[in-house]
Length: 352
Ligand code: SAH
Image 1 (cartoon, rainbow, N blue to C red):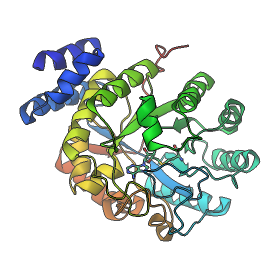
Image 2 (cartoon, helix red, strand yellow; image 1 turned 180 degrees about the horizontal axis):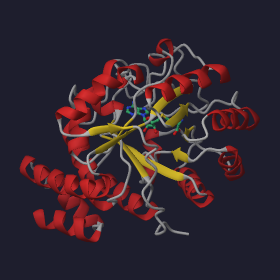
Image 3 (spheres, rainbow, N blue to C red; image 1 turned 60 degrees about the vertical axis):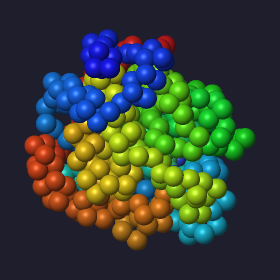
Image 4 (spheres, protein in one colour; image 1 turned 135 degrees about the vertical axis):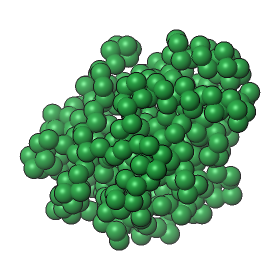
C-alpha cells in the first residue's frame, strides 16, 4: 500500500479504484508513513509556517435547510443574530491588532445581506484594511454577484462542495439544492479570479469510501487553492441528531492524502477537528495542514453560530487566545505567522 502513497506523491493523483484501495486499506502504520510524506511536501513549500485566519461569523440566519447544519432554517431553537457593519469592522480592528491579515466572513445564506449591503461591507473592509485578504464564505450566489464582490475587494471564497456524489448530495440536502449548482458556483468563482476553497465533512451520514474517492477526484479536477476537511458532528436540533460523528483518524488520513494530491494547498486544521479531540488541531498540522482559523466573532455570538454541538470557540480556538495557540504550535515545532498567506501560485491547471 506504501506504493500507492509514493505514486500519489509523485503523480499527484490516483484513480478511483486506487483511492478506494488506499482508504479502505489504511492502517496506523500506513497513516504514519502518509503523514511523514505529507509533512515533507508541506515543509518544501511552506516550511514550518502556520497561517492564521480570523473567522467572523457575521450572521446565523439561513434560507437553506441542509439536514446536517445547526443553523438550518427549520431549526427554531437557535436564536438568530446578525452583526452590523460597525460590529464587523470592529472585529476586523481587533483582529488586525492581534496580527491577523486575513478576515473570513462566514454566514448562513441570509437574504438581509443583499447584494448592495454585502458590496458596501466589503468596500468598507477593503478601504480600512488595504493590506488584508478578505475571504467570503456565504454560500451560493449568481456569477455577477460573485463578480461584484470580487470587484469590491474580496479575494478568496470558501464553498465546500460537501460531497461530489449526486445521490449522497440528495441525502444531505433538501430538493431545492443541487450539487450541479454548487459545482457551477465553484467554477464561476475560479474563473472570476478568486482563490477558491472547497472541501467536505468526513463521516457525514451515508458517506461511503466510494464517495470520498469521488470527492478526491473532484478536488483534483477543480485544483482549489484551499481545502477544508473536518469531521461531521451531529447537532441535536437537526434530522441527523442521532448520527455518529466522523472520526479523527479518517479525517487526518484524508488531510494527508490531500496534501500529497495538491502539494501547495492551503489547508486548515479545522475547529470541528479540535472539537472532537483536544489535540485535533496539532494532529491536523502534523498530518499536513498549514492553516488555523481562530474565532474573531464577538464572544456572545459564538455559541449561537452552532453548526454542530459543543463547537469550540474559546481558548486556543479564539482570536484572543492566540498566545495559547502559538505555544501549542511551538510544542510541535511549528510557528504562527502573521503574513497574509496567499496561495503560492495560481493553479492554472484548473479546467477552463
Ligand atoms: N453558508 C455557507 C457556510 C456554511 S458553514 C456555505 O453554504 O458555504 C461552513 C461549513 O460548515 C459547511 O460547508 C459544512 O461543511 C460545515 N458544517 C455544517 N454543519 C456541520 C456539522 N454538523 N458538522 C460538521 N461540519 C458542519
